[in-house]
Image (cartoon, rainbow, N blue to C red):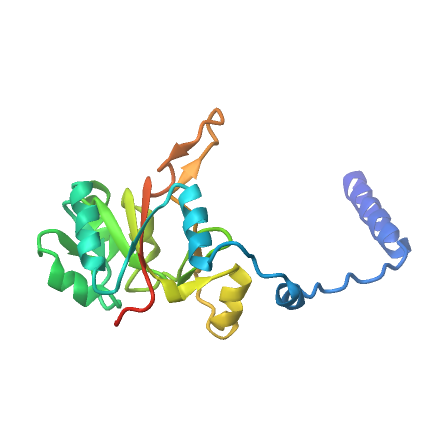
Length: 228
């Protein structure tokens, strides 16, 4: 009983201190929208140039191309890295182009449950390709919304992640992207910001790439002004 009594006394003392604590003024909710609305726009370089500089500073390779030429740019990336098996999702905006331009033996569709091709995914897939929702120029980050067609695994497991990004999807800040694309009305269960390839410095403070995801990130940036 002495142990129970001591516990009750301790609990009572804690609640007594809480009740005796003076009232404090509630913290005002920061005006995030106002901050970004009144923030001075960066100068000296375009949004595209800012994205290129920041993305490359995180060791992402950015290849500028066009809507018409990106399949050729993709083929060059695959050849340069000797990619034999590229994993892609069906039903995406790039699926038909991939099917038409890549040999069937080189293209692997992510159209089966993970458990049924786990050995192939971790042992025979050289790269994964995804679409993007857009990007953040301020940090050089990509915005991904994984879904059934393009699960998170597609950009996480293969050692090379290739992302297709339209210049029209460049946003200055994450706030601009969230507000401009109406995330509040259609928030996904898993929104991703990808900033460069996977990296960590947990072990002896040595920067290592590929420990928790792809070792390389290649971004195919489709410039505006080209017919879709």
